[in-house]
Length: 431
Image (cartoon, rainbow, N blue to C red; front, side):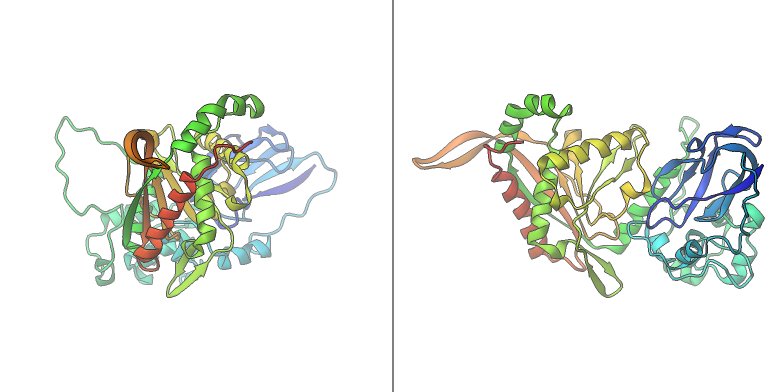
């Protein structure tokens, strides 16, 4: 018999650790190669991890709730091989992964994670602290002496995010540096009065993450929103005329979202300074145009999968990507790579019957567009024989942008250009 270590897999280019949610198998169970063995949560998505080898799950090395670095061992699998497979020690295994743990820079994560990019995970007290824990320490102004006193419930006494949250709830004397910072979502700024008829609902993990990121974004970026009303009549009439033929040809429906993404990608090519991010006093101009689309989940939470290189896809290609990502998002089948690398985001608030909205920018992007409901309105239309009043299909575009780097002229011209592309849609287009 041979024994091999199952390691925490790398689940996306910016993922450096994962939290063990649930073991789907017990010690002693027989497992097949590629069979799901456990569920892991990252800051991007929850996902099932398959077995790297078939055999018997001999020993589980990481408990549920543990935060494990990419490349670290999580289990030992006993295979049917004749020779023992060398099991590297935790300090020597996967030196490349260990280097990535320190140097890799997350792109589309919460500011808590991005603020920890340059912090070594091993502190002076000899304990290992994950980048997430270190960033909480920095955000809350916790000294190294105070940190060393926090008990850890993770593997080998490691301090987990939950340990930090529990400690902050009990912490009654915040330091001067922490008083200067925005409160975390774990802190309550105003005492809430609770009556016997009130129901207390604990936020789930995703809702806590969304809450923190929204607060971070409003703190980081001064938001400005510009509005434009677009005439969607050509697109509405084309879709009504072709939707049945499209379904017959491709086996799926075509929604309005691909039209929005196509117009946004074209406008980004015209105004590339919308496709940027900010790093201190530096502007990072992105070459790829990766458009994220907000998807509402059955749980009521929100997730933003990303269409990579959207400007290189035609309408059919974008439509297929939209349908695939939306379906997998609602069935919890997204991979971490589906959620990273976004450079601009669109949110369809019109799907909820809203005519407009003021969306919050997903960091580290600098802009986001909300598209409202398409409604019939009387409008003045210019014709060769004069102006007439006609019924047109109208929609509001709401463009929120980071006023640190995007001024009103650029933000306003960009949303106007998106509307222009939508209005100029060719009724004779084929698929």
